[in-house]
Figure 1 (cartoon, one colour):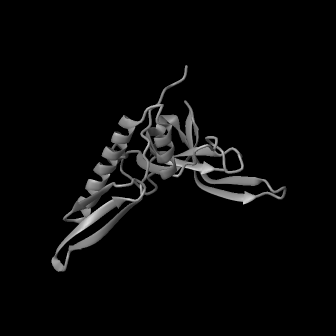
Figure 2 (cartoon, one colour):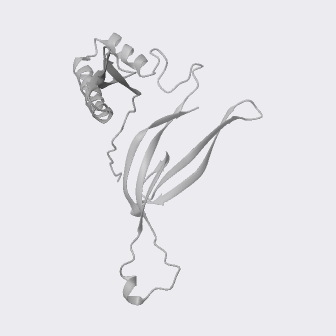
Figure 3 (tube, rainbow, N blue to C red):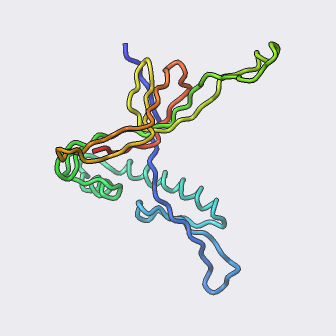
Length: 192
């Protein structure tokens, strides 16, 4: 029996926020935020914080509108969006410019409970107050099954003596499934 899990996938967008002044009047300033990856996605606000909140909403609206407009016959528009998001139309999914396979690893945030440890003297009445430590760890998802979640926080790429690309993972953490409170997918990383 396999267990089904649903993860929230977040896509990061580059946002530019700049302070603007109305013509020559330096007292009437506002902030303009624009998403550098979504053409025409721009908002104005009176504070930087408000501009960031509004651009977040505008990005959501922009993506929703695009998803509503796309159909299978409109592959041209799908390709244009892929190029805007950094994908190359015509290249096989999961391949680099030479056709070599690229592994996509999810970047995850895992919240889990770790054992608590009290090294100093403690009275018996205070032992009941000890609680497991709530931990949050980030890394590339290497394994996710009924027994464990394994993440690696560092990826090193190099070329082996034979000239092949070599990938090394460091700071690998194995978290028992029973200790996991939750996991959120933050994005993904292409590893050649």
